[in-house]
Length: 145
View 1 (cartoon, rainbow, N blue to C red):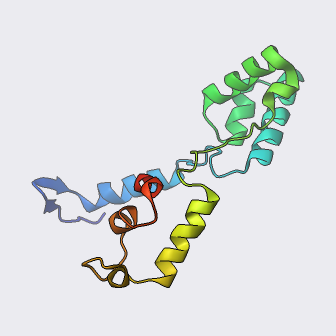
View 2: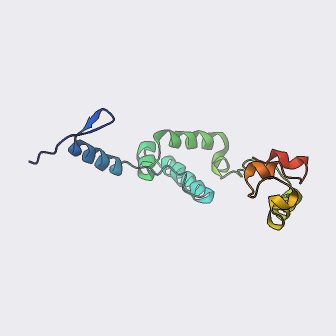
View 3: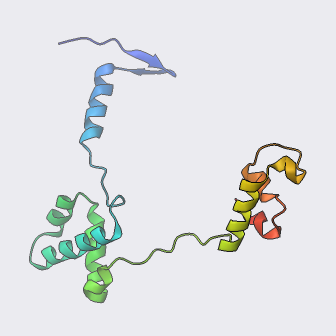
């Protein structure tokens, strides 16, 4: 049995063996919850999981095999009860709406790549987000964040 000397960090004493054990435990915990999977894969996973439950397998066993949270299988089952397999399909996610139109982006790109700020009579030499926002491209560009 080896003795490891505790060390201090910000008024907290850590024992190296305890820290090593915590790292080992955290490495064993699963962190894959489906967010890294594409929509079609998740859709197939949902359909297959619900089908397995409909075939008599326990929801707990099915979701544990997938490595996802327990509540997720019950959400999928509720969606299936509401709208069948159609309710389990991947839905289009639009994301955040664009603040600039395609024409505004092209115009802004032209200004930034063609001119330096000092050519446009600005009193600075580099483009930054704030300086682009204040560029002479028009009032619509003010909404760039």
